[in-house]
Amino acid sequence: MSASVGPGQTRPRTSFGPPGVLNRMRGSISRSRIETVASRVTGIFGFVFALQSLPAVIAAQSYVGPAWAVALPVVVFAGILGVVVTSIIGRGVAVAGGVAAGVFVLSLVLWPAAVLQPNEVAPSEPWLWYIMVVSMACAVVSFNMWLAGCYIVAVSLIYAVLRSLPSGGEAGAGLAALDALYVFILGTVNLVLVTTLRRAADRVDRAQQAAMLRYSVAVKQDAMEAERLHVDALVHDRVLTTLLSAAKSSSAMERDLVVGMARDALRALHSSGEAGDPGFEVPLGELAERLANAANVLSPGFDYAQQSITGQSVPSDVAEAVFSAAVQAMVNSLQHADGAEAASVPVSIERTVSLHPLQGEGFTVQVSDTGVGFDPAAVPQERLGLRVSIRERVATVGGAVQVHSVPGGGASIVIVWPDPNRETTAEHVRRSFDLRAEGT
Image (cartoon, rainbow, N blue to C red; front, side, top):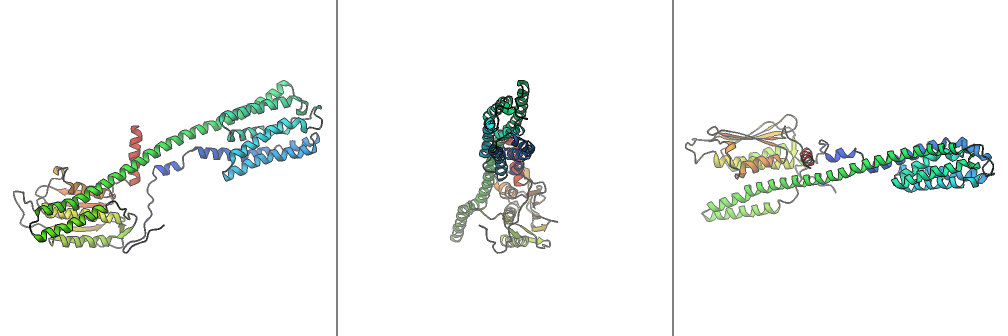
């Protein structure tokens, strides 16, 4: 379901940020990938390797029964071809490989019955010799390690016995054992290789699962921290202001105004958990207009200025956070710049609000006054205006706040978006995850 685009908003922009933990995992090793690669290599190369036995299959027709001469190659090659097909479509590979391995064992056992003269020495070894390694590879892909190992041993022993029989060429005990040992070594190497890759993939899968668990915890903590900052700023901007106004109200008109402020604060608290539209963008000129109106409403002493804005737009959550932070900075200037508690009070205070688009993407908003100034390092932690309503609110949307002020020298609050030294949300969460992973 797609979201509708409201008035003054453009379509959501797509963000292609730096790859995070999930993107890094997409190209990593996994058990499913190992199984896919092993099955396709076994099927495709096994079938090509089996085709090389066709001359021996044709030559065996002179001493193998006609029915067996057709049935055995068809059944054995069909089993290998089934592994090829299932490995490509990605379904039924274990079943197809198990069937191919079983058919091959059955073919070895039935070979003496397929020969026309079982008591006469066959002119060559059975053509099944050429694809024994392929059948072992099918067993390795389809069975677990122990069952595949038993299969390799059993096939080697069965072939050794068959090779010593007249129908198998009546090779001596040494030659039969040597042939069996040869295919046994190849099958064992195949089993060791695939088993090693499987175990390595299992370890990677377990590590990825643990990483995803830590990653999800980091994301939740990051979201909870952002929500806490939002609620803190809301309580300071709306609830605390309402309570202070209520404490100072003395007339009926002021009390009615406080009641209206309380209703607005309750509505804001009630809707604080609702999801916004951070993916939408709004024109930067709209933010500039809101700032100009706010400066005019708060006090006629605020002068507003802006540079030329040509079609630039910003995410809606960024515009909302910057606007709220700028309004809070203007309120702080009205409340503290005159220095009522200071020893000397300026005769008049100049206050300005300005918006400056940056080259490329970004902008700055500056709230300045020529008041008494303050020491930013001396602001108490319990004062939420500068720390929560301005700094942390802007930081949650990827911006930064610069405070320039000294006692007696005025104050200037500069909001910069985006923060040139910022890290994206994905980088922040990834860094949090990496720190937690190092800690464990």
